[in-house]
Length: 359
Image (cartoon, rainbow, N blue to C red; front, side, top):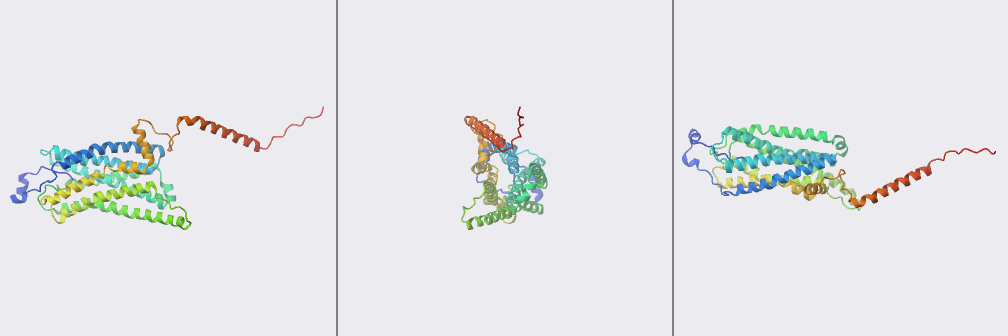
């Protein structure tokens, strides 16, 4: 994930490599990755912070577990941007070229993989929640509450962070001139399984079940010649999130496996170029969710608008009525309550009156 420059000549001599074998593949892109990651960081971090604030407002206002899961995804994306883009790609590649202790580099590598796994696996509880809501609504109503969602998020984040520890021994794919070792093979396959094959398999199965359930519900409407039911906005947002992830991370997964079995990034400039471009695409996934939320969710757009205008959102999830409509609504409410009381009084049985004795 990161570019290490602390490769000494003594290490090459111990490996017994010839001088021609130490020739590194050239970075064809030059300073383009540094410029790209700088722009991505300057745009992605403020956008994700804005997303986190908007989702926090919606979560506290509506108490819906959906916003808690989306908030976990946003927080993990911020960690990925800080550790992978800022520390890994910018500081270590563009600033600290030399004199960085190797234990520190390995520790940063483990932190990068932990943040990466957290960013990806935090989407899995969201997918499971949407599957339960659409395919098992009764069970979902019983188990769906914020306290349980927070516990699930905490467990997923702890496991994701712990999964980054073995990658302390991850080898630098850009500058390691020796062929991949048995440890490299295990770590690479563990990495691609955790970040792509397992989550994508879960997304594919659950999304297929969701689409199948929605189609079955549309069939009675079509038989009754009624209007077809549209795809829910929450479901559309989920499909968009998982699809964007699958598309953006697929090239990097292919390049890593190609590096392992066919040609090394260190020896072939074309593989080096493909690895650079695939990393740039994969990191783009940490900054696009805000635009997906804005495109799909009206409450999210309203929360963002309130934040940009420096005003607090209404207590009720629905938009508050303008102030000039309040007196009319109040008068209507009081009139309705008065009529209601009058009707109750008319419908109540009249109390017996005292009969006056004739004098």
